[in-house]
Image (tube, rainbow, N blue to C red; front, side, top):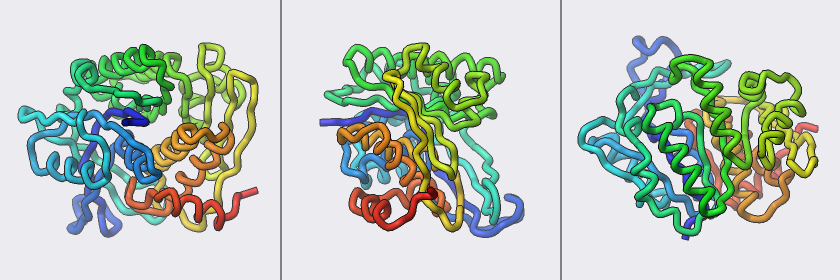
Length: 317
């Protein structure tokens, strides 16, 4: 039995152990990253069953990622090994203030060759939710086609489709192409999860209410707009809306992965029958937890740890 299906590129990340330019840093720690894999990890640690679809190279990085997937109890029946291409990776700098610098080694990676056939031959079983990320659509024309194939397959099964635009400008040929493709996927989704800057860019609107209306007018059931440290705003097709406060964070270490953590918290709430507002609050909690860690997923909590955190840590309001 599977609750959620998601798909995308998993990568090995090497995180600098000291500040400075990449060329001057001699010591790095190894970890794993990938927006969709982060969501899968977050959901499985909260007790849900996730099937993850990707292509990995038959190489040491691919072996490392596959071992990690097994260790996290993520369903790997949609993980395909490809001897023709390598597994992607990237390096991430260490900073005291602001977001770290990243440098990718992912062009022509195994995951970029993922296509519709990988989706078609993977059994979605009785999954209730398909989670889609805009990063996968940016990797290559074939991976973009995989996104549409997955959405069509989910719609045939009456699954709920959640979509995080996850804008990565350096992966797209032009901003016009990026906007067109991401909005094309968004209007085929039920729940859209943009950050505030992403929402402004994709819709051309400034106010959160107007950004939400852009997608609701085009068939969306709910729009959740992430507002960073202050929390999130939501609006539904039933015209319910509200701001949900964030959780207090004394020191932000790294914001990379915060949106993925938010998605896993929010989706877990939906799976458990929580209201939209309570699900958003859970997403806020996951986002606050992950920004205190230098990695994308190591700090993702279990259900018990999450509940303890939400009882202990104050809301901003």
